Length: 238
Image 1 (cartoon, rainbow, N blue to C red):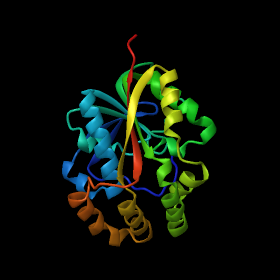
Image 2: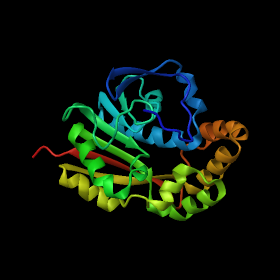
Image 3: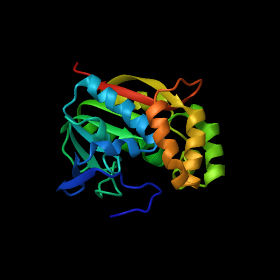
Image 4: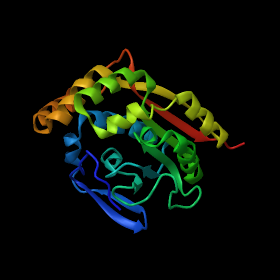
């Protein structure tokens, strides 16, 4: 099962089928990390730091497309479920209960129809043994998302705008119902993202040097309003 979406497979990654809908991720060229678009680099880097903080050794990357989180976690076992590359769905994950220490969904929830988000969260919690980590564009970025859609017409951004961005307080309440407690933090500059994303979409070749420059020099810029919310949650033991 494949879907035409406006992103490309990152170089230096290899996917190996483990079972139907699930592929393992291996990194064949770590230097390819620097070729990631800046916006993808910063969110994957933030999630990787959260995984390392939890010291999780097995990770299920749900909706990660090509498993590029592997660039940032060379000593971590990573499996991938994604409708475009492995054929698996977040709404019915093809893995057993609590089979991974940590389950992540990076910029996925906003691309799930709002009526299905509860199901998606329940599936993430079902297969997570200890930790669930989410990252998505937060509601503070709505105005910038609307402008980005006007400038680019990008189908992924259209879902941000038309389906509404996730309400973090609601997400945390849902996770709490499934036995996970945690917190969130905002990160990444909306201002840098807006110009970078517009150029990347409208003129990909021209954006190559810009992305590399931003990755090298502006990966942890301060922000007045965050682009993303990063949620780090742990299963309660009592």
